[in-house]
Length: 192
Ligand code: GRF
Image 1 (cartoon, helix red, strand yellow):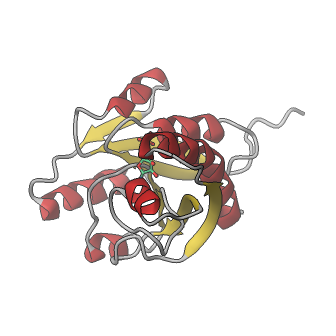
Image 2 (image 1 turned 30 degrees about the vertical axis):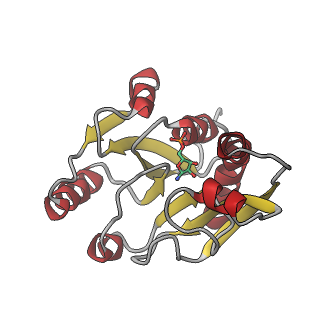
């Protein structure tokens, strides 16, 4: 008889604040047979996030949570996550810093993608910083989220060569292309 139900996939929420190219890429990945995740929820801290279009396009539940009062925002998110049986969170261009309490209460199953070769260039404007420091390489990192910004255990990294006369714009495009390969690979690594 034909098997109707495949192997159990991990119910996942993706948190965004902007364009959502990583979100789109993860949704595509989640629809492949090899993917260990299903994306059931998209959370954004702003209704202006362009990536929210993918919620409609792929019929995924979305919630916009205002972070003006972080404690309240995180409380709301935790309850939505519980209600939706989510057990894994991928941050993808999410511009808010989650509190230690939130991270702890979600049991450490939160990962993030960052556009630099961590531990170098934590925080914002990574491409500008790498170019200014005359680095030969930059890249991207998927890491576990801890309460210390961009400092959790590294899951996977991908290097990108910085060309002569590279602009932060061209570098960010190059790195983003690699991010789209790295994020699914890192998810497979930690969930399989
Ligand atoms: C990516 O470069 C990601 O590494 C960083 O923010 C950017 C988000 O891009 N954290 P997108 O919204 O996924 O297109």
